[in-house]
Image (tube, rainbow, N blue to C red; front, side):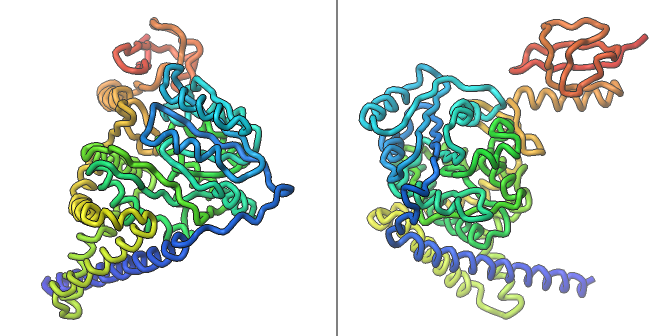
Length: 465
């Protein structure tokens, strides 16, 4: 038994050493790539006015984000000869409308329009909001920009140039947190501009799999049409990641330019930071499970302590000296990355380092808490995460699961699904117009609508005759 235990411990130690070496590669490669790509001004686009295809920029809006005026105006200032700019808001009383109208008055030479009103194709409000703009886009190349992002004037030209390379289906940009104002926003910056940045840029450089965050994405409408169009992704909360993966599976690869998607962090609170991180960990649990399960082992503290034990066991290295070297290397790498992406970090060194330490300490407890749940809050609404990556309003999703488990156990043959008919009350007998394959229209059934949920459900129980 002791021999078996020794063997298992040795295998575990070797695995932890390999994992530590892998993370040192990520630290080294990520630091190098960011220093090389982002420490100097980007090159100009090689495209000429006669070779530039048209581009449609979509900017979905909801409310007035921090620095919204500057974020949106960066779209008007693109150094590109042929593009249109479409803003979309779901609510006619949205305060962002006045900001858009003011910018349209300031830049009358830009082909810009505002679309008010969404289309309900799923639970994702962002997809619902920008679908009308997407459907009315003049050009095949679509560039989706989040409202809290601003970009440099030459970004569009460089991005289109990359998209025109053979075999490229999507161009995206490294997210970078800037202008933190509160402690929560410093925590967000400490994550975005260190751990996230080095992993994101290294994974995309190796290009073994799709890795896309939807702050700034450019692709062709004709390509997405092969995948069901934008409306096909309203059922996902992480539509950006799902679209990127779908394009990848077509055999088209992704490219990143040297541009950065500057995300204005503003007044994010500490609880909001933890809620946001937990939300995306939970979403990733159902979209990229393997990567999410490995995530704690890529963080400095767990990775370092496991490696310290492993090196001491296998090579008799002092654990304390190893940890000193480990954290020195790790924080040095993160400092170089953070100050390269946002030079203002140098002036806020104490705040950044304090936020870095808290973020690292909180990473594992946050991950455990996030993995234990299956609901996420998005813009004030609660959603249930399904195992296939789709989402549903929490009350509906949880009620469907409860009803299905209960009825399948106590009433064999019962089916629970979303009610797709028009009648508010259904009596025993034939049911016409039931969609989505819930039951056959010729079945003898008894149906009862559950009206006390966000969206009515249909409980179908086999009729007794």
